[in-house]
Image (cartoon, rainbow, N blue to C red; front, side, top):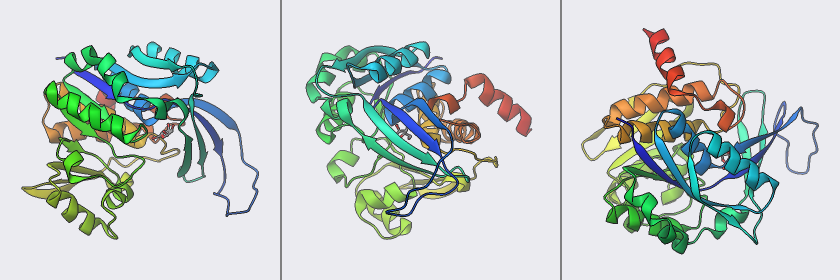
Length: 302
Ligand code: RIB
């Protein structure tokens, strides 16, 4: 069964430099080659799902500029329905400045531009996209009031909701109660509730009503916490060269599993494989695997 996924979120052009090590404050260092890659957490998750075989529609905004044209064209090429990606006349397309060190670790600074011009009204204009989806996926690279409206519309249309709270900000229990699958990384889980430790973040998130908490732990795998208990699923051991969009690969593939009718553990396995493959490749969207590659990877594990 083909799953139908709606992504409400960001599209960024990633400007990437490889470096031996990250600079100190006030320090200038020489980097390696410069690359531009299609990115943005929303678009990455949409592409990850489309490459898994889902029918994906995206709601977002880009600027009326070359980067915006490129991002829409690359999403089209992945078969994503971009009719709800608005071209903003005033704001520039979102840009992410990314450095990747020799261990594949990154820093990312986003200039949100048109992404932060996405309004609740834009979602109402795109109401048919909600009516046609099984699962809605969203992140925090769009205004919070728009995300809140997206959650309300998703509830009206009985969609299952996946929220990847990145970049993290404090969230209310009221907002979290509208989320079916909450997928932060370790640091984001703590930032959302202002906790000092992961343990305390997990406890607070459960008290705030999070139903299915899936914490991505990088090479340590994934921690799953529900009111019934917790467990950890190991990551597949691979040699990471670039971890940009690994979380997005996980979220897009996970949502595809759900939309296809898989249970949470099966969907997490799909996400884990997608993330493992993505870190072995450079760039955000260029690193995201096709479903066939997931099947081959799993075949090779037997
Ligand atoms: O998650 C990776 C993404 O974060 C990058 O593609 C960048 O655009 C930022 O949104």
